[in-house]
Length: 223
Image 1: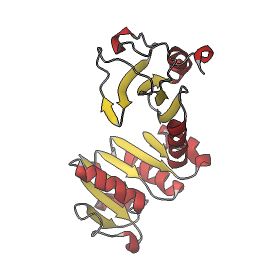
Image 2 (image 1 turned 180 degrees about the vertical axis):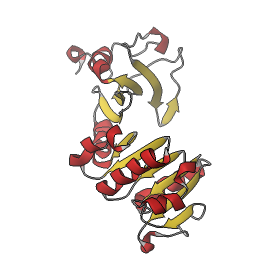
Image 3 (image 1 turned 90 degrees about the horizontal axis):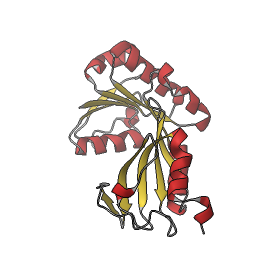
Image 4 (image 1 turned 90 degrees about the vertical axis):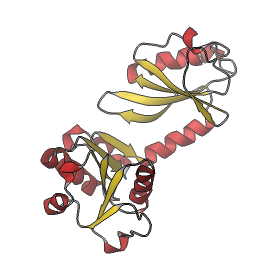
């Protein structure tokens, strides 16, 4: 997979390193010469150019990319990059970094954004996830499907503790995707039992979240 990343700062470089480690081809684009640091990501391609300009994106051969990630520190620039990638170069998938929460509403399909990543929201969710037991925490939103990646840490008094995954009848539009236990990740095999302290990851429709929370940790049962 070929991925272009607009913004070669700390965020862009970190994403590039992860993608390259997973076997993908990565191009980093930045208009600031001080950000062009091939020594930090030697296996990436580098381009000194303004990713908001058509000439730069043409030089980057954006039409050959499977994904474009707009990861600059400027929300306006990220929106422009994503819109050009989608409308002018027909890039199948775009990801936009949201720097300021007040701009999050702009990062939608109308601006060519398939997936938006809000650093403040994600950090807040991770803090909640780290300290909350028995409450559903929304980690990520899939805008195209109106679904969310949600997490719940099983309390000791959950009615499903000790039950097999196969014995649980999840609400409609809810899928259990992983179980985190003792720093290990398990697939939700039908014979695997649910234990107190398990972190359960679901993809869930927003409308089903209340029912899922009540099923796993009924409010009347919480200590």
